[in-house]
Image (tube, rainbow over all chains, first blue to last red; front, side, top):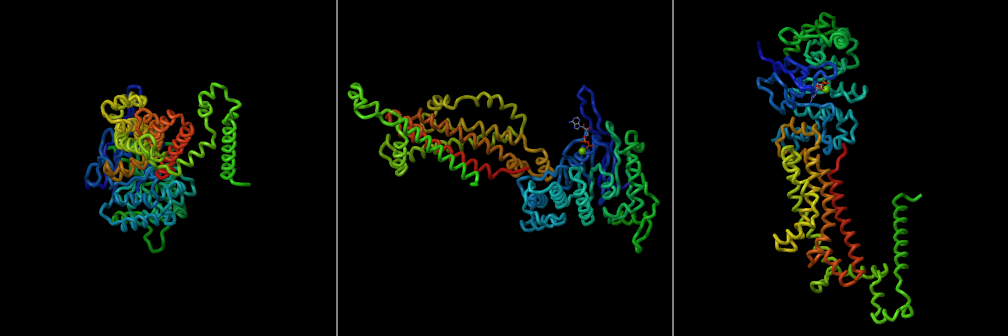
Length: 302
Length: 275
Ligand SMILES: Nc1ncnc2c1ncn2[C@@H]1O[C@H](COP(=O)(O)OP(=O)(O)O)[C@@H](O)[C@H]1O
Ligand SMILES: [Mg+2]
């Protein structure tokens, strides 16, 4: 068996329950990510998604289990893993540009000032903020702040990007616009992304696979759902794809009816589900119409 | 309608005129000779001299003093500028020394709960001690009145800076520290580029409180040690029964204190940030 880019093996998190006993938030979390994949994790509030992400980031420690990235165990935070937090986490005394400059300098300490600045500006441009370079975060709207935060994470070109409900605090309109921007910047960079969301549509729009987490305590990653919709995707047209509805129904059914009792495979790995398997894709005339080959081609590219 | 500032200024000036007018009227010299008792005549009109001087007299004196603030005519007769300069010099020396100690220690106990717990009992006992209570010990150990005054300033400036630095550092948002961690900043770089700017407004608040206290204390300290300085000057003029000079120097203490506070206020503005 070949090693994956990221391997998560038997993670669990235990807290004292305040009554002298123990509370296991989640246990035996196992999954693997391949390079270039975009994976979302969906689950009810409190099941431990943020904790898992923070363990991957190296900001939190698991009670058991380990995380191996590129064959090296993850111990503590590092520049090869970039994080976007829900509350943006921009340094408020720095301008938008300098928030990115700060990160780029940390990533490439040997770069000249001009190169750092040019690189930073390029990423701010990618999220459409070239007009707001010199504004402080307090002078930016929530959506603009989150764009800066995303630009910062992409600008350092980490091998793995971790996003914790990045659009959770934004209104629906703004969220849509920034989702499109995230799609665009991801199509350009093909970074490996692990993202938490509670928005099923957002997960389908962005992901190659969606992890479904059962409810805590003792939460597990029960299923891994393939999203058989070809890239590039767009928010405005994705719902015309029949695979979209199949996938959406499957996810909603899990969250509403099955998240309390769902279990992974016996070996602890998530059950693989392909709700849209065999659904005909409305392809452009030149492309092959078969989903399988589309997926295969993408795997080769990655 | 005039702007708020203009109206406030007009009102301020009218209050001043009113207060000075009342003061002037209340301190008119008594009617000449007629009102003098025999006793007063015998005393050479001393009572007339020891009344509170009217503002006109204080202003006249202020004009004379301020037009030549740096004259030096011997130990007991120096210009107000020289006296204030001595006091400011002592305050700034003690204050800078306190900064050099308080900021690093504040950082340390703000970053380390262990150090905080270990040092907190001492801080709590030392902090409420009146700075002047240290004076005899300082004089005995240091054997130099000037240095003792500076030491007293040092000891009274240290606490607000120390506690505010510790508080500011300990309460830096965890998100910002996490930003430093995920970007693999070294501890020194984290301290300088994330924690210091994040805590700077709180630290500056402590520094502003400290400079205010230091300026309050220097007057009392100089009254004790004597020699030079605005505190000594006030006391000396009181001994000379020159109340106009006493009032004038009180006003100057206020003005210099305000300028010191203004300077720190400006510095505070520089490091402020909005979240
Ligand atoms: N310090 C703690 N002590 C006890 N329980 C905690 C602590 N921190 C988090 N938890 C619990 O861990 C669970 C997972 O939290 P989190 O990872 O934030 O969930 P999610 O992101 O999925 O909403 C929550 O149910 C929370 O109550
Ligand atoms: Mg969460």
